[in-house]
Image (tube, rainbow, N blue to C red):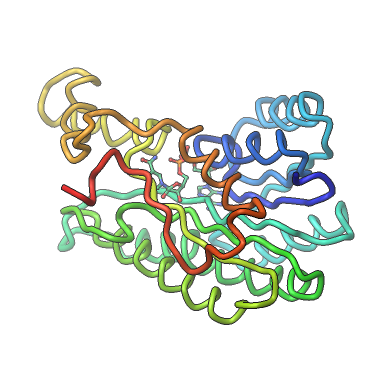
Length: 260
Ligand code: NAD
């Protein structure tokens, strides 16, 4: 049902973004990949998705902390797909765990740049064309941390609450135009972002990776992590006709975390 649409997914070389790219390609969307990683691995991923799902794909790198890279990402995406971006998934992100007193200001600023400024900038660039076409989907990969807080994650929690506010504001501005803006709020998903935290905890408690993982997952009443495709399938749903009236809202997939 997304045949002929083009999706730009930031941070799609790994984890949730990669899963979203495949889920949208499997529905027929052309994909603009972005993110860091090994050049050969990225080429393999981008070529395989093109082949497996018979869609057009391209990779446009760039560091989303840099304003000119964000602009270049959009400009190069448009050169490849002159029809414009129909689906924007603001997914790129990273975590830094540290007590507030020791939290480096430059890391805070980088996190804001990737998870708040870049989504603002890309949405600003994409939304005009979506409105003109009368159809568009802006999906922000927020987090359960857009609704609840955890210790030593001040930057992440503030930014994820911020992106939920941004989602609501964009939804109000685009209401009635055929464009929707929604937030996905996963609990813990076992991607490299999660694995690093589990490893750090394992080191701290002198246990195994599984001990670290178990400790993190205490906040999930299910005791299990969310799987990448349990997030990416929801993103595909948000792109469907059935989700046309879902705008400004958050879709929470969290193993029961916020209900606890
Ligand atoms: P991941 O580390 O697997 O992927 C992150 C992606 O972002 C990678 O492709 C990476 O290259 C890219 N990226 C990071 N900094 C970048 C930059 N400066 N410029 C360009 N690309 C950059 O992590 P993930 O778990 O898949 O995270 C994806 C999103 O999901 C993030 O916004 C994260 O906050 C959110 N999220 C993750 C979890 C989780 O438990 N894994 C839970 C809730 C929300």
